Length: 380
Ligand SMILES: NC(=O)C1=CN([C@@H]2O[C@H](COP(=O)(O)OP(=O)(O)OC[C@H]3O[C@@H](n4cnc5c(N)ncnc54)[C@H](O)[C@@H]3O)[C@@H](O)[C@H]2O)C=CC1
Ligand SMILES: O=P(O)(O)OC[C@H]1O[C@](O)(CO)[C@@H](O)[C@@H]1O
Image (cartoon, rainbow, N blue to C red; front, side, top):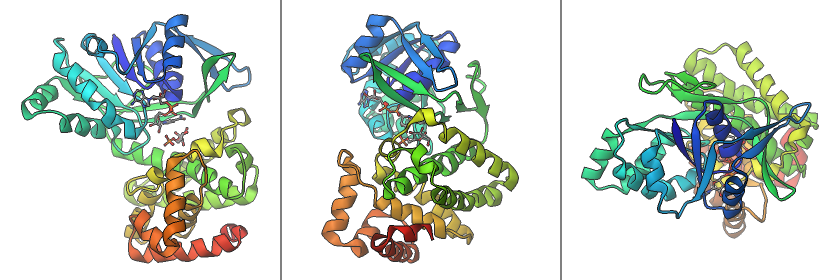
């Protein structure tokens, strides 16, 4: 099988690329970053490093790379059976016209399978909609006929270091790639096929990503540099546990999950995130706070569910306040939030920034005012 993958970053090379390699799939990476493209092509492969005891390295070959502006992308799409992405949600609409053109030029017998792998609810549906938006009705009819769009949830911590001039993905040993079950695409090994995709995406966002975001934003309030430093502060671990205990109730109430199994799942996540070798900065994990504070995302969406279900959410509001206080001068979204608060004051900024019922907005404003006076009160 041949695949084309958009986004040769940490997850693209450090996770998707590795699983495709284990399945003997020949993969072409597409990226906008010349350095990574040149490296893959010059070395005819790339290394990934596991952050395990021995720092095991794995060599991924049977790969090549091309630039996003390369007109030959259509030909590669034509020769591929699988198209995957791990490029960042906002970039899906940028690559949609390229994918559209490729699918329309495709003359293969079998439909192309498309799987977008991004931290968001139903990433593939977002990509599908973006492709539809740039297509004429007759083109879209053709595309729908020849494409199988499958949603996914991905879980692995991956980042990239520059070592001896090489961009090296460093990853935790753990990974989970969950894909929507479909009788026409079930041949990949090292993948979990499921029917109830919504459950798995929510579990990833509301437990794994929410835990990570909480350590990043609360850690940042207390000036910790890395997630692992923040996790050494038991007061922060206590608050994050309280936040996630609230989120777990959604799974108990909506899906009938066993609370003890959820606690075990959370503890396994703490163990993964605590891996000191990750040395993962709160700035990387907290990146794009505006996206993370949006309506259907890891922080606001669980609060909306808790509110609707009549369940406690007080600790989760502290996470919102911490996210509003996230500062990183290199992050446009953090700068935007800071500017809106500075220019309008917190009372006006909060309703502008957050899609929550008024009652909750008032509680967030009060909590914010308390915390800016004395950050330690966040942990009370
Ligand atoms: N890093 C992680 O541990 C995890 C990341 N994810 C998700 O995976 C996705 C990718 O994340 P990372 O790999 O961490 O990001 P990254 O920044 O390391 O990689 C993204 C890659 O996409 C490329 N890119 C961006 N815009 C492009 C465009 N318009 N055309 C061509 N190439 C473009 C960049 O040059 C970069 O190489 C995100 O949606 C993230 O939420 C999900 C689970 C874990
Ligand atoms: O900012 P993003 O792209 O949503 O990703 C944030 C983080 O989510 C994780 O998937 C798990 O929380 C990380 O490994 C990743 O760095």
